Image (cartoon, one colour):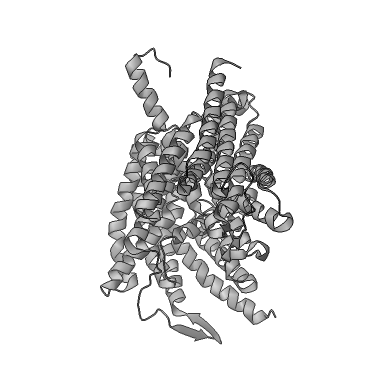
Length: 321
Length: 290
């Protein structure tokens, strides 16, 4: 492990420590309720970025994976009353398989066709769930929360810590991919797929791998939704708002580095929470849309890009890029 | 349970519905099919046109006249949108794909939420003497509003086909789609032609919006569903073919109407997206592709 890895893992441990500390000291339940949403977006944005940021394949169907994760959890609860950990594992597995199969079907298509196909998957799955009585159909399904496990005194707090763990796992995965040969291959695909293929980069394999990892992470964070809301309905679990947020956050934060989606998610997620509470929930989608357009037009490399530019200017031409 | 009459009804209804889908998609057939602009905000613009028609309707203007009145405004709007898109993305080249997509996705959401903030999430509809009535042909009750949409769709398709094949500018638009560098070498300005074409596509979206609110009540979130329908039609048609768009619209309309009759309305959204997925998987160049 080199020096940078040490810094990263110490940082990750510190974040987890802070989350645990908060769970045992902060009394206000709403804090956890809001923080959970922000962490959920950290995972979604990071997962989106593995395929969208590194490989340049724009996924509009984040809500498909997220919603399937939530409904896998519902099925596991209804069928075998499985514990939360098992629900998350199953959701991740299904999300990964779904990623691969979507990839096989659509990755031959480039650009907008891939994106449209992912929207299609989201809407089709929503329609299927809408018509499936076992999981509640269009009206949704009520879930009874099991009694909370020992060290925690409320279920929201426990689920918040679970989300923190998932967020750290997602970011660590993204970071590993970015710094390894996988990330180099994906970047080569993004910059010029034909050239990469000619140079011997196994493009299809890499894209499928990215799809699988991205889908598994999105599915995994979908699973706790059932317990978090103790109520799941297709219209909210498959809401396209998740898709636009998962796409906007990395673009606003910066897609080339793993920290970009995290910055974007924490910033935008918090702003959304504040706007939802103080003004209306419609306006928070507006904020996301406007910021997305502003950044895509004005600062294509996101906050990370702006920061780098500023840093370069201060250090002169010799600074680190 | 299932009867032949029901099927005939479904097919006739689907035919009319399909022509309506053609009208909604034909603008996209120009902007995405011919110009290769990833215009995912097209359905949102159609819904915007529907709300414009609603606003004019509150002053007592007929929906179709309102749609026609909105066209010049939308034409200018389209020119501005394309100009902006060109200056910020196409001109710089490079990663325009990802960012262009994200841009139009963002624009679609801004339009949708803007409409929610302005009008609320309630459904809106317009009044006209042909809405709510129906004609009976051979024991079949056909809603007059669908017949209006049907007629307008046919007129639109014929006019656009004629425009693209007979007029000088129309041919220039086709030329841009076929070989842009060649056009540039001939001394023409492809950007100005594309700008014009995008303006036309957006103007057609305004009229399609008027048809949308004639056919049924409209709500801001409707654009999401029409992403599937419009792109399904355009991809099925093969990018940029106008008569293909009509055929594809009818295919979608009839399939949706049959599914509606057999399995119920709750399965309808899956039809267009499913057809689209199958098409993308099997034959991405479309049925009538260039």
